[in-house]
Length: 146
Image (cartoon, rainbow, N blue to C red; front, side):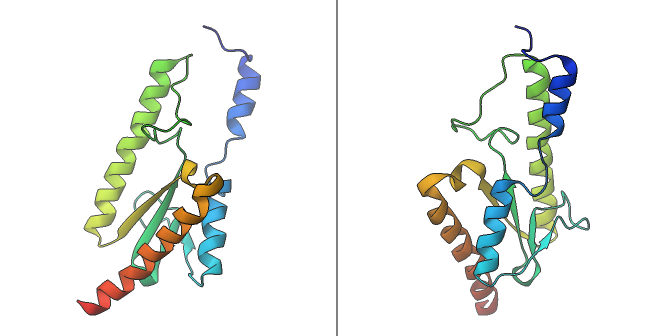
């Protein structure tokens, strides 16, 4: 099956896909900020430049797109019908990089939370954000009680 767009149109469409400041990322940022949590964005000093770094809680938050990071069982992850092998290699590289960065962060003493794009849609959003907030806050209590 051939692509429905010519090469220039496809290139333009792909260039419009953001890797920073995505809608899901902004939703999480606004929520955590409204709860009084402060964070840094894409800290270059940490493996994988995590989306949000909450230094006070020694925690990083990654907001993953369901397609780009292959959210298994998610209706938003569909294997493309064209250039399938190329896309699978690209997505598998993303997954392997995520795993490696998570290991490095853990070794450095960071706690990592992953929020999936689909969990920020519709009526799942509030529950997902509240669970994330509780997990982050519980970190400070667990650390001070040990």
